[in-house]
Image (cartoon, rainbow, N blue to C red; front, side, top):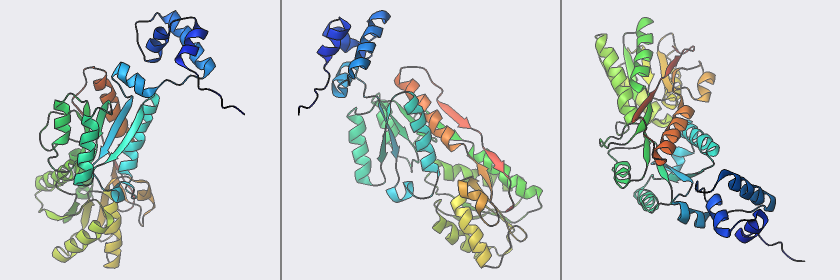
Length: 335
């Protein structure tokens, strides 16, 4: 029994009646071959089931047809029940599938992981890089951009690098949420802020502070890290320091979930005694007890928009440097 040989470039050339060089140019995406000849070659490729050598194609085109999505987070965080990361990944994957390109997911939650990402991307193993969930003044996006590698970030880089980014309206979304609490008569409005080394945490706290200041109310602030555990700790702190609070805005739904449980354990009724609003509108927000009022961010659209910009940037097109997507307040029984 013999093993079938893999179709070769020469076999495609014979079937199409053209030179090997012409077949090579067509399969590598060259536009120098007339369209009728390209069509003949494509039919021969399909008939024989020829699969181009990707390494050789990369040498010819200087493209890998791959895009890296870098998440500077630990694996336990990325693959937790926080739906922000899966949403960004899903949006990026949808756009890349439509463009017939590959997604390379890279975690950079440790110094070693960060160094590995830098080596891989500066080695030109991908055509561009998407950065999500940046912490602190990470210099890598700006460094790659200065090397000519196309880069798009989720959120404004905190080191001031001139890198295109896509984000959601954190400040406006939180302002809408806090005004809803004010309109319902709440006057002791606390917040469980997100981490202050991330643009989402910073801007959501800014939205809270601006709105309570406009209303002439005091700031009641505890800080978490977008996880349930930190939300529970922050909620206990707020109850100890401000036992008369009557509302809480939590900067993520996971922290809001924990706040609901902590308030219930403390004998506080939601929303009768304390109203609660979260941010993200993750799937389980509608199934908490009571269902959670929250700010919906278009997270899949965020991933798609980032990827669209990156593909255009990699193709040499002029792009918008900043895109901010709208948010929406989803009102449920918790507030």
